[in-house]
Each structure stands twice: as structure tokens, then as C-alpha cells.
Length: 166
Image (tube, rainbow, N blue to C red; front, side):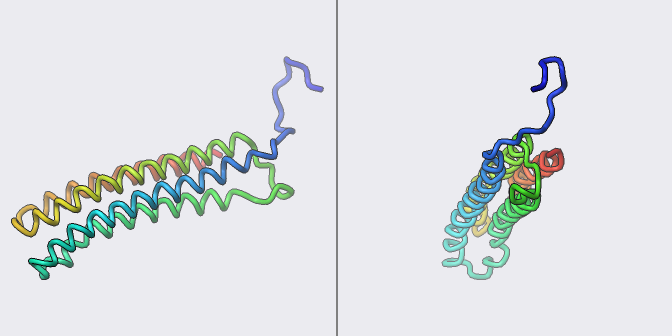
């Protein structure tokens, strides 16, 4: 039994610690893909409206859908990295600290992906509809979409930093 004055050791690893790592993987994929799906669906509604009147603008109008798909890729990257750090219990000492870092990493990517997908969906829907009426709006729409996408990129950067600390 260690005395109070000694430094704590990492002898005890709770058996439930990997749960938090798995929750990080799940939250990254669930929230990130919900954001990507919302962005794709909302932008797709606008593209369907544009295609009815101006079929020649469909290809340029697909930019918001592509940007929404990138959000899901961010979630996939962090989920694969977290899963790569996890091994069955006999092989590795998976600490509670590592589990919480993986949870924080997954949540940062997932929730920023949800916010980015929401922003891309709204801007994409109204942007492509406005682009149908006035072609000069295209550059402004792409810039606003980039600012929405960068929210997810910030979450990925923070998630990668957190994952490297575990």
C-alpha cells in the first residue's frame, strides 16, 4: 500500500477505461456524419430546385455537397486514429486518462463537424438558389462555405492534438 506522500503510480487501470475511448470513436462518427448528412441533404434540396430551372448550373452547385462529405472524412480520420491506439486489455495498459483524451478528441471532431455541416447545409441551400438568379454570388457563396468548413477543420486539429497527448 502506497503512502499519501508517494507519487501515484499507474498500477491500477480500471476495466471501464476503454469505454471512453469507444465513446470518442462513436461520438466522432455519429455527430460528424449527422452534420455531413444534414449538409448534403439541405444542399441537395437547393440543387434539385436549381436543376429544375437551370440544369447547366448543377455541376457548379455540387460544391456544398462535396464540402459536406469532407466533414465525414474528418470524423473517419480521428475515429481510425483512436481505434489504432486501442488494443485488447492483455496487450496494453489503457489508462483512464487516455480514455478521456480519446473521448475529448472524438467529441471535438464530432461536434464541430455537426456545426460545420449545419452551416454548410444552410449556406449551400440558399447559395445555390441565389446563384441561379445571379451568377456573381458564386464567389461569395464559396467563401462563406469555406468559413463553414473551417469549423470542422479546427475540430480536427484539436482532436489530433488531443489524440497525440494520450
